[in-house]
Image (tube, rainbow, N blue to C red):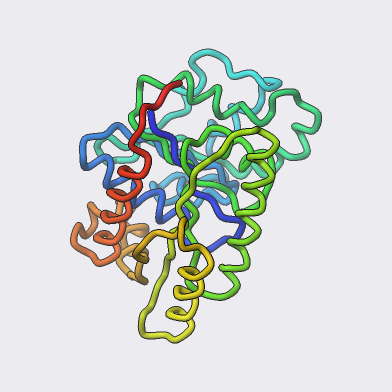
Length: 262
């Protein structure tokens, strides 16, 4: 199993789109893929037609057992997406209450890792779509992940958010004594605007070693795919945004090509 976290401490930068696009492309390759929604807003869950406000079971259930994960519970929470080889562990808005409820709970940062260990033989890839805020959910995701993908919109305020995300990552890695590789992915790039071009150049200058070599362009097909409840590659396999994500997927697979163990 390969576990990739998709995170940034700023909303609206393309985290959910990245998760769905990469998940759909992996599924099309015949890989068994699980998308995990860790955002109380539930954008990933809503993409596939579920209502985060009314779900009776969700990722929230994993955190209700004093730091333990009952045998068989993760499998019970997984649901279909309508896309072959692609499954979803949905979110509910109740996730927003975890910070208050889990204060002082031992092992609170490893619950997701324990849950995924139970699913290790069921999936080839797990993609974790994160909340934009630092807290127990992001700590769980970074503890479970083998690689981090950081989407960053090519505009000034998003780049400031990237600095906060990388600072958070450094703090967590120090506390866990674990180095987590990451790939910064420029998103929503519009070569027609000076602001977008300047932001991309600034990213290339500041993060030359960790920045993906290309950028995900602005593409209205992503919105259309979301409205249709389909992964972007199933909605339009040759859309320019899908082609860009296909390049990204190949590059991340190559970058993370190493043995994975539970």
